[in-house]
Length: 239
Image 1 (cartoon, rainbow, N blue to C red):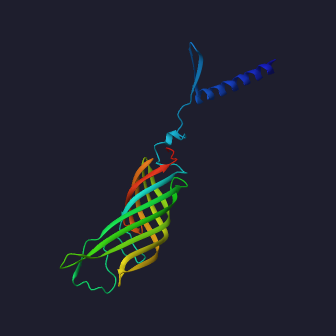
Image 2: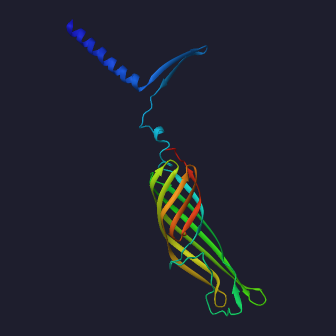
Image 3: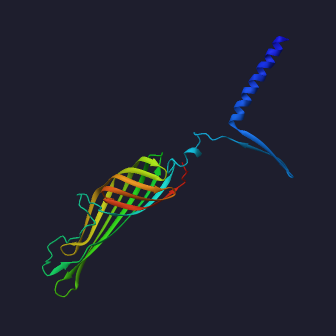
């Protein structure tokens, strides 16, 4: 009889301990109205849940992002700044002519994928267009228009070394191919086509936002010394 009481006592103790942990894990409440009885269970907050980390980082692994930007200071294979000044290349007599100002327009489109919270790979396409007029010094008539089109495509690796709230600080490195087409730059108004190895190094970049975000990058290479634009993240999860 004493063994039976001992076993029953142990069973009751085990059930009490399990019930205590279950009570700590969740709380159950019952409500009654004209339609019936309802049971509601509440689970206490845990610091390990994803919800608790929702405001810590701007994106989750598996995020896609699309970026559109403008830039200044794109460079050719020789490290020369492309969108600076356009000059005639050849033996054209310019003693009776003068150059107007150079005008440039630049656009960059990028698609990237974040493998985790700090590393992504992207494909970037860049286009820089510039033109400059040459005028007759005496008649003010336009003699010639020089044009440049610079294209490059390159894969880039991005490393986010600071992630907090909606702010992300990162560095970028890229290597690809570029083509610079100079229209009517040679003697006899011929074109010049120059293919080159396009590289880009951005030691510092900042992105602010979650789904929609703005960004700015500073560095050197085919994507310019300064790159500023907007982006959109796809399939983001608030982390």
